[in-house]
Image 1 (spheres, one colour):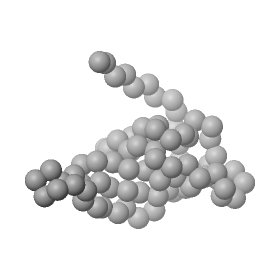
Image 2 (cartoon, rainbow, N blue to C red):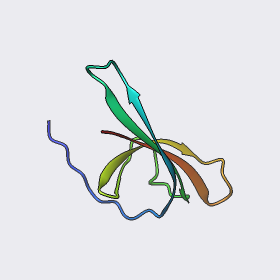
Image 3 (tube, rainbow, N blue to C red):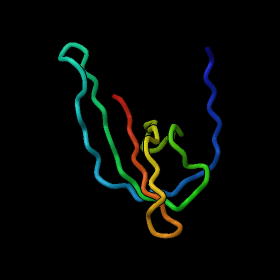
Length: 80
């Protein structure tokens, strides 16, 4: 199975603090980093989208559109 990525544009993010947690058993532990951010409302921002910044790939796991008009709250996650 081949996977292809295509750049769809730029997104300006106001990043919050990063949180790091460990999931799984001791022998198969996985470090998961979570990050909250704010962005301008954009129809391209949807759950499952992959964003690349600061040299890492992040998955968009939550988009909250109940923020002030023109803004969205995002929750991003990456597995290390």
